Amino acid sequence: MLQKPPRRTRERILELSLRLFNEFGEPNVTTTIIADEMHISPGNLYYHFRNKDDIVNSIFIQFENEIERMLAKPDDRPSNIESIWQYLHIMFELVWGYRFFYRDLNDMLSRNRTLELQFKKILANKIKVAQQLCERMRNEGAMQASDQEIEALATNMVVVATYWLSYEYVRNPRNFSEPQAMSDAWGRGCYQVLSLLRPYLNTETRALFDKLAQQYRAELK
Image (cartoon, rainbow, N blue to C red; front, side):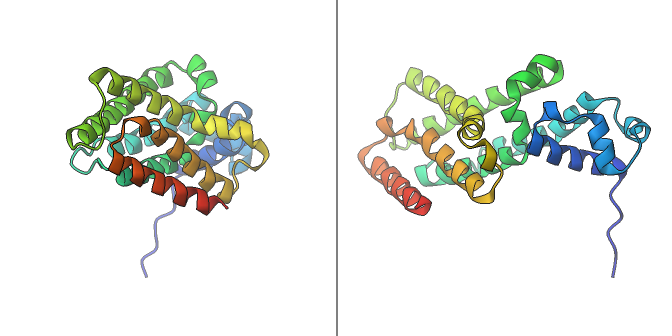
């Protein structure tokens, strides 16, 4: 049988750093801790990365590539409330894999100019996608809203989605990373984001949203 080639040290450093950042928070993890966990010397780590910001930026490139691929599929982009709920759940799952960016967002942006600039682009893209989804639902008769209302809705949806994990962490910091708590957090996030749309949905679509919300609440019990 063919064996997979061993992962390179650089890839292992990124994988370990992502796990440590997610578990303990980026400000609490130093390059010394990463090197110790890797069982390599600090010099070996610095051969691959100049400093911790270099590691963070490299992880961010991975995240950016994944989220941009997800946002850049106009033909596959859902436009009914059930598909949007599923789409958001997948988006929260992706964000969870890189949750330290969101949990420590304000602190990290204040220290890292590269992240500041690139994260702004991601937020702008998210707002554009949310606006397009709302416009498609309006065009299909699923909701009624003016251009100004859709613009505000799109921004509010992204604000809630962006800071949802921080809110969940504050609510339950000791059990934040437990699988069930994680799954519940995604569900609550999807519900809160989509509840912003409810006042603008037509009767049929609103009934479907209420049905999905009821199913979601039943799963939590």
